[in-house]
Image (tube, rainbow, N blue to C red; front, side, top):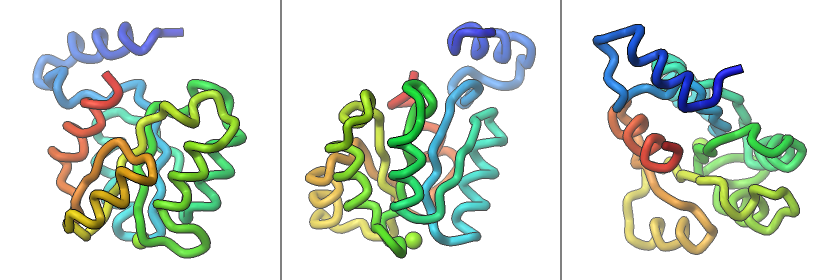
Length: 150
Ligand SMILES: [Mg+2]
């Protein structure tokens, strides 16, 4: 079994064209999004770079998946804000106050079409680590994930 670092290094050296800067090999992502098309696009960008994706279609499903996961299952959570059943902010607060050993520390990045300061403040207050504006580009997505996982 490779460690994350070994896996990334070997992947980079075996493919000279792929720079280490856009390599997400070995990164496990909980992708939370209720919109089919947004889910498909994000999944495509991420899996194209070697990331492993677990999908959740609303906040409750994400919360259940995270809180029942073994430690180190996920490296980062990408969280839509507007979702049925439980929205992204509430989900983030529940993850932060959960008993999961990584609940307080796992990076959670909001994905939202709203760019207002009020929205960013709400995300921060809920315990989000960062914020991606929709439509999310491949470059911004990869760059943000790398900031928080490597
Ligand atoms: Mg949504």
